[in-house]
Length: 52
Image 1 (cartoon, rainbow, N blue to C red):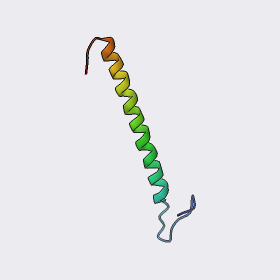
Image 2: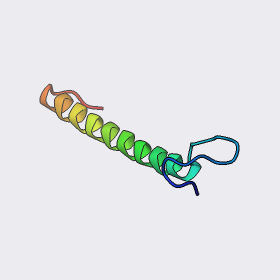
Image 3: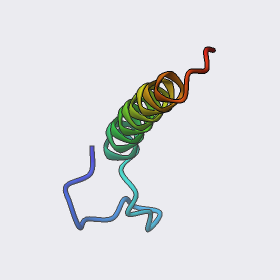
Image 4: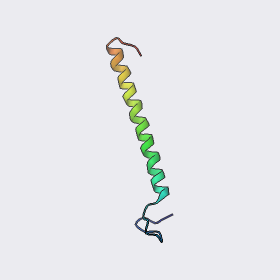
């Protein structure tokens, strides 16, 4: 694992492990945003007397 700010012998400064952790966090944030949107959408539909 690369220390933050250090480069591998080929000059690459990207840490695959850090990027995978970041991607997992983004995926969780996206899933939460979709759940909130769906919930709000269902509430609005119920308020308008519509279903599904």
